[in-house]
Structure formats: structure tokens, C-alpha cells
Image (cartoon, rainbow, N blue to C red; front, side, top):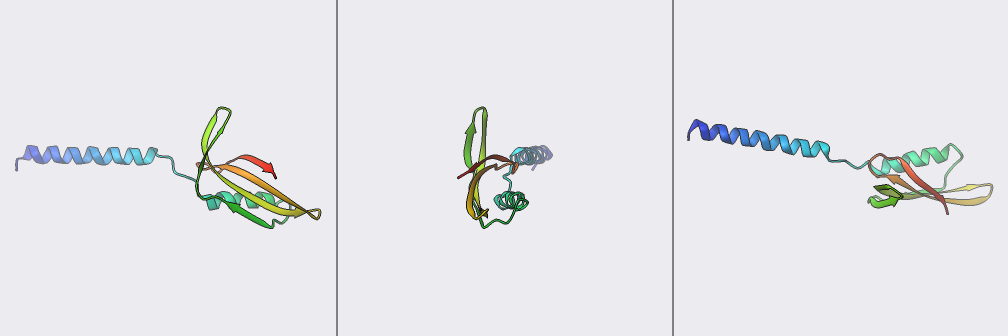
Length: 104
């Protein structure tokens, strides 16, 4: 085996490793759905106790006006003034930020 062949193999391997690293670093990772639910629950707990909560663990596409992203959808239920209140929310799957809350 010639030194030239060895050098070409080394350079090719190093370039491939660098490209794989760059692609992996640029890929957006999803925010954990459990953490999103926990932050929503904590925000609602500031107003009083909650009875139940849920979240879909799979992100869904969300389009609103000029905004397109993936979101987690979930809900919170609580009793306030002897009345059951239910809320549904959508949270950005990449940042965890709430993009929509609706009272059901």
C-alpha cells in the first residue's frame, strides 16, 4: 500500500466525520414533551390546584398565519369556583414555548 493511498483514505475519513458532525449539530432537536407539560402545569398551579393533565408525546404540524412549526398538544383540567375548567394548549416542540391556549 502506498503512502498516497493511505493519505487519501485518511483525508476522506476526516472529511466524512466533519460533515456528519456538522449535519448532526445543525439538526434541531425536540424539546422533551414531559418538560413542556411540567412547565404548563407549574404555570396553572400559580392560580390554584389542578385536577389532571395530559400531553401527546408526538409532535404535530402547526400552521397559523405566517408561522409553521411542530407542536405538542395537551390539556389541563381544574376546579375553580365549583366549576370544572378545561384548557387545551399547543407548545412549540423545539422551544417549549406555548403558542396557543384555548378554554374548552
